[in-house]
Image (cartoon, rainbow over the protein chains, first blue to last red):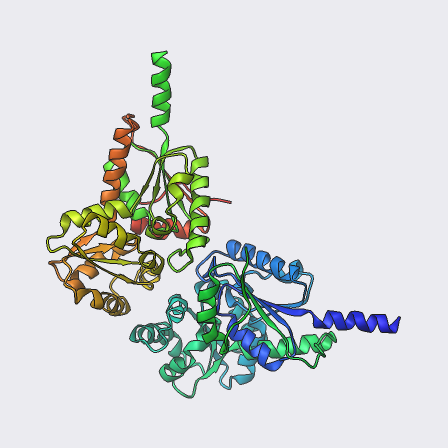
Amino acid sequence: MIVSLSAKHYASNNKAIGIFDSGIGGLTVMRQIHALLPHENICYFGDTARLPYGNKSPETIKKYARENADFLQDQNIKLLVVACNTACALATDLDSYVDVPLIGVIEPGVRNAVESTKSGSIAILGTKATISSGVYQKCLKAALPMGRIFANACPLLVPLVEEQLFTHEATILLIKEYTAPLMKHTPDTVILGCTHYPLLRPLFQEILGENIILIDPAYSTALAVQKKLRDLNQLNKSPQKGSCVFFVSDDAPKFKETGALFFKNSLELVTLKI
Amino acid sequence: MIVSLSAKHYASNNKAIGIFDSGIGGLTVMRQIHALLPHENICYFGDTARLPYGNKSPETIKKYARENADFLQDQNIKLLVVACNTACALATDLDSYVDVPLIGVIEPGVRNAVESTKSGSIAILGTKATISSGVYQKCLKAALPMGRIFANACPLLVPLVEEQLFTHEATILLIKEYTAPLMKHTPDTVILGCTHYPLLRPLFQEILGENIILIDPAYSTALAVQKKLRDLNQLNKSPQKGSCVFFVSDDAPKFKETGALFFKNSLELVTLKI
């Protein structure tokens, strides 16, 4: 009986962590999870046929998030990571929809920002949908009631990153424009509330100044995944390195090429989901 | 018997012209059709839940084009206009798929460019998918075998237009960058091969110089629609002004607001397609 239970546990622990994003951005989150938990199997889904989510409506984003979660649950996962700020901000009922534990990027990012700030003045950058949802602002207010919270949407940064214009004059101009109204309030901490933005981190640091603390929620998300799996006794105990498999809804070769920049590693096993 | 036939013809001529695009861009085409043929009923579909098409794969664009055509055919249309350069360039088999006559924007645009050029040197600007399909280049070569044809993709212009940055420094920088390699070949005619670009027409003219002839395929497309309906004896003979109805797959209020800029008129009767 005990043997059977252990075998069952072992099989269950071997299951993959499921991660989805609208496209390639979530690979910055996957990279941190893979680095922290190298023995975990990971199954990533990028909804490249319908990206970007950032300028779409709450109803559409909710629908897409459920469909993505269904697809990953069919892959027999043990935990779901929503590695897309927009989906986390809008599909707030996804937790009750799925059958596995769910971790998003917003709460870990907020926790990290609250730990980092000294002045209590925090700025958030994200897509239109993320910022207008108000979810980051609400979570920060709850965690830091006396905090001063400022937010601005940066709708063009995702396409600029997708075009790899990491140091282009147009990117510099737009970052200055998006951040100027926030910097008037002299925040000491700025949350990069979109998984594409960490690729612009050096530019943000240069423009905002070296004293600004930039928060990339990816690492805190990886820590949250580790804690959750440990609490559930679901960490993969296998001595072997975990496998990373990728599914996309459009154009696997393009995903493989651009995705490598986000994952900082080559992407094998990319499959087009029909 | 004759009366019955006429009545049938009349009912058939009353049917709407169907138009689809990935989002709002096709409204620049619809505007020209509506101006030229004010008595026609028009039914527009913008696939705003899945936009943009320009950076997606041929297979995905073909699939979306068929689904959009199916939806419009269910609205009982008499003619289908594909008011999206990317869909025209990639979904080249759509003509044999649909049951009604089909008109795209590429052939009318090519005809217009060939009529305009004096030097035989023509440049094309479009999305990545349109340019890499090579369809414009192939059509121009067929119509003007001695012509010198140059093309470049402008992947960031669609999001810049969607953000209404019509005169922004970032837009100027990127237009200069996208057009510089083409202008070396001193074309006298430049095709704006994406339905978003006409909104940047003044900026293009300023950057490229006033001697350059800019071709917006929208007006030639409207002429092609008029000719086709006349040939088929399907022009709407009703003395009343035609109705314009709009369907979108996401976020009707946003479409209504931004779409008015493209249609140069307010948009009533916008319905979210479920």
